[in-house]
Amino acid sequence: QVQLVESGGGLVQAGGSLRLSCTASTSIESINFMIWHRQAPGKQRELVAISTSGGSASSADSVKGRFTISRDNARNTVYLQMNSLKPEDTAMYYCAAGREIVGPFTWGQGTQVTVSS
Image (cartoon, rainbow, N blue to C red; front, side, top):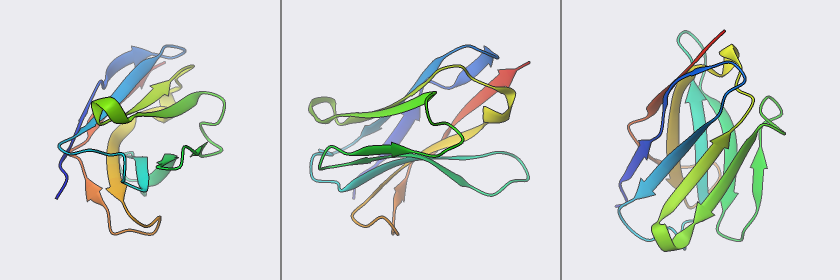
């Protein structure tokens, strides 16, 4: 089973940028869905962005125009480029891999993003 490791989180001021990485233990070329989620304290988990093996990408309305998901199959890595960060983007960000959009998913351990105002 694939294992996922996220990295790139940290503390950044509002308006700043971060790039998160999710590196898999195996090839991701055939993994249909690579997805970034986030969860803030006391809130439900939120889907942030999706990358498909067919090359499609989409993002939630709350981050559209600011966040971009991309996939590098050669490096077995999915990225989340986050620009114009806002304090409300503060959350633990998780990477997930799955064959179906509804799951089940394999999850990483998460990386914390904190945006100060």
